Image (cartoon, rainbow, N blue to C red; front, side, top):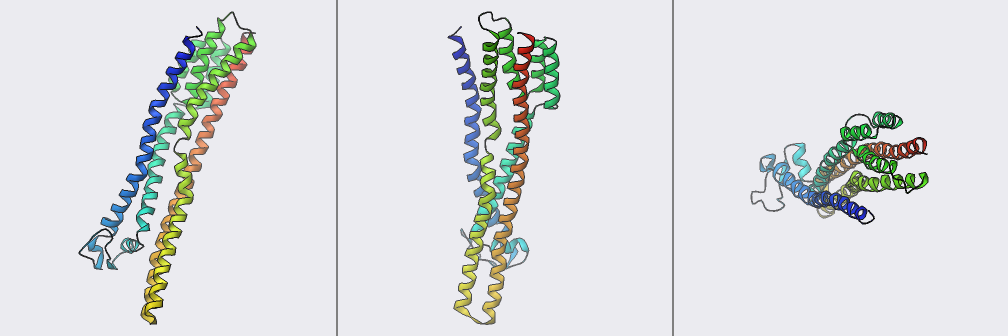
Length: 286
């Protein structure tokens, strides 16, 4: 038996690593794809030739269109920082959707509190199989941890070689191992949202500063009322960077707080599961 337990643990570990590796690949690809998509939106939609009275027909990587017709076209003149900001916003959207789907799956079906009470009822009646069936129906992180603990719980009931304290410790250890497999999946990719909360504002500030430098340089070179008008236009264009960056950071911060709150709720359910199993075993099988 001492040989089979490590093998089972290794099988569990291997099964959990495979989906995480695929998730990491997506995490590395998503920022690159989002930045490329941001450039395409900036270059071909915001920078469409039809949106300017004096388009640069030669095109290229960064055409110098003049005379924007609409507000979206004025955003194009915010400069090459705008594609990065659009890319940051797309990253917020992508990782928000990814975290929403993952956490929704981790929540399982029904209320976690109701699920724990149902398991407590079955354990009070010494019906471990019914408790395991409830875990299969729950299909979430709390159910997964509870199921791992219940399997060890059922095994300890018939174990005649360990005392009650050792059995409780074995159940606790099984719950801790199951928890260690579930929590990284819940918290993965949240770092992108927390980083974009600050990065969006900083990149926007960089775009604004570059725009201001360009505008004041034009004022210094040309002078006169025409240059003052050019300065006003340049400042307006630069502030598009600020607005886009602040909007991106605000959405990222909001989604980060929403997901951390949901994760805290799931974590509380997992902790309650472990407490339920140990308390039930100590009261039922002294």
